[in-house]
Length: 485
Image (cartoon, rainbow, N blue to C red; front, side, top):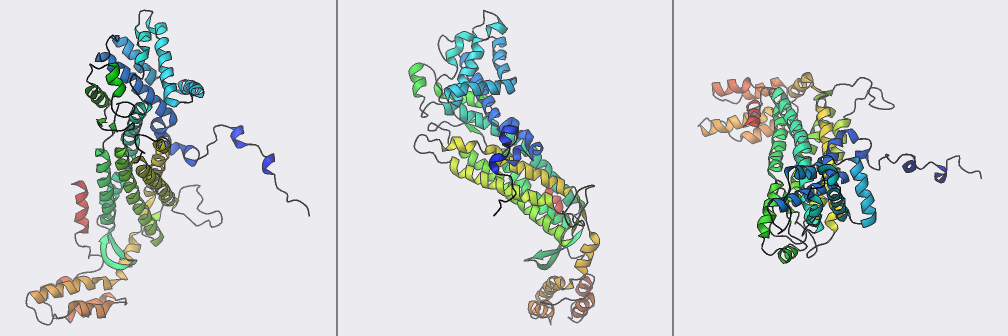
């Protein structure tokens, strides 16, 4: 038997060797453009930059407040030199740190050595009289790695949320709210359990989703970002022995607050990460509400409520040329599910650490970027999808006119009110409407004939006779205004 005519895997070019830039995952490959703003906050390079930032600010804090006796006083130029190490941190510095870490086999120690080298090199920039080389042992003073890491992650996540994710999520929600206002008067046949039900308006249904999303955004915007700097097991043990005269809790609190974070006074070796669990639960809940929006819009598209505006040159199907698929919403669904799964794992894993320390949080936190990346990608897709929709008002009118039986609810409610007011002949209103409408399609004439034979007061009968499925939307239009409250 002859061998199949295929290329053996061993004979193929290794793609990783062909180009180191080829991504393993879609966020750094196919969808890089949509999530690129998060790279500046949640990548490994961003983590190292924030570590340098924390170390620099800690050194400045110790010297400014004269915490360690004999420590030099830094000039404004020397402080600026240190802060420039952070602001100029780029590709060359990333590579340099990687080289140091290959020797130390420890990421935070590599940052310490990286910064000490900058202090040693300071005379070349500031002159021989600079005191920075003599401040070398204040780098990482009293710190355990987690003192630097927890603050770095808090700064990274805060930046990612406040500068990237929250603005994108807010813009999306504002667009949904704008659509709600635009279509607040557009009657829509509601479906409960997939069956025709009391009519509403398209705008009111979109307003429900916008309102839910905004509520989650308010929670996320108010979430705290905690930090600690208190040593190997959270006792300030080494600090007190080295410098017993310092008020270390005050030094710690003022430093954490200087970084714009909330101080956590009681920790083990690690900051407990409860704030992260709270934040990720809130973001995951936003994801799930947005997932609900995506599935509802997909269903409206399938039903014909929304018409998708074709994109010039785009292909919906490789074999069916007529198709315009709701791919933006399907893509969003998948990415929201991935994001929420990662956020759930982060939230559940990070709140537990064995005794005073284990390393499960270290690996887990390196996946914060993908968790937010999939959410940001979904937000981008939903925004793009919403902008390519139009409403088929004619179809909505036809649907409503084909379902006069939905007026069974207001008719029996009016009969109940008339009975309470003393009108005779209003017995068993629900049962009579059930017999008339259940499992049947009624015409306008059917419903009006039934109303005319009930013996209702003239004003009530006239009000019901004037009612149609399209006009039976209650206060739906007015309720949209609550989005602005």
